[in-house]
Length: 339
Image (cartoon, rainbow, N blue to C red; front, side, top):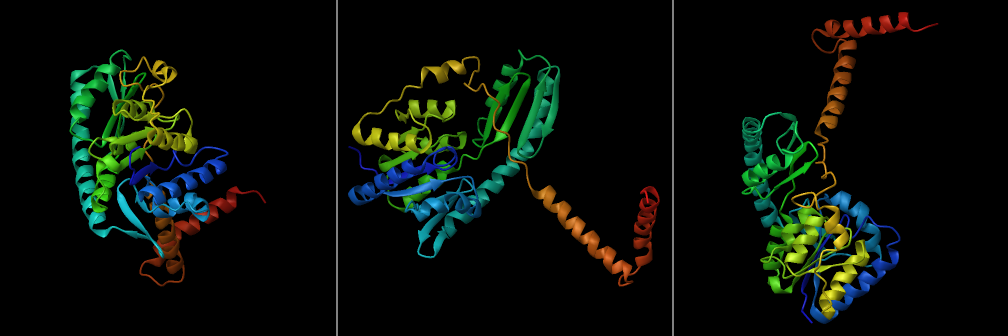
């Protein structure tokens, strides 16, 4: 029976997202408390969410005694549980912020070059989307899409934060931060825990970095995990659960504790993606759209309203020129509206 001193658990899709999980949460609490008593276990939730978003989802579980010892939020930043809440690991968090900023700059400079390279090598490619962290290409001939995707994969290989997908006529490069593994590794080092004492469980692409050999000897995933995750777990000799969500987490912990690990990818999952070179048949996850544009519009609207009010009362120079178009618009609307 292996000694587990640190368990890293993904949040969305692994610990939350299922239905009728209440009984499983109680079982998870008992399992983690038993391992705490017997093996001095610490456990960490790893999520791409911010603190407020995490607490809005997980606070009910904390109320029943499922409070993690540590958090890794936004995929990289470490927090420790204290009597007053979760305290940041300042030294690590400042360092990882510099690393992420540098990676974003490198990717933002690289994507336009790769876009031009793909168009020069393959005819009939159109660029649907090109942002600093995301590129979506449309290939006229769907038979060429796998070749374009493979070229992008070879080119993007040094950039661990990038994943390449192809689906029909589309090829997409999506930024998926591979920093959870770095954060788990740093946390284990900080706690004097070796990789041989770490179990990592997750369901999504950004959880794969937690499952590298240097980070965690023991790995697992629930039945609802992405095929790429199942393959990573299988290659590491981890456990692929037959259950989804929290029930799958319990299955993984039990399998490693009792030597009943099952590493084979379910035949149905493997067959469902047989036509994709990387086993991805369904459309890949779309990157989250930034809220900056909406916030900018709100700020501009508030600023315009304030200026208009000040101009109306003659409190700023040239107020008449500012107010006049507004008055003309009101007059025009009054004429157009009936009655």
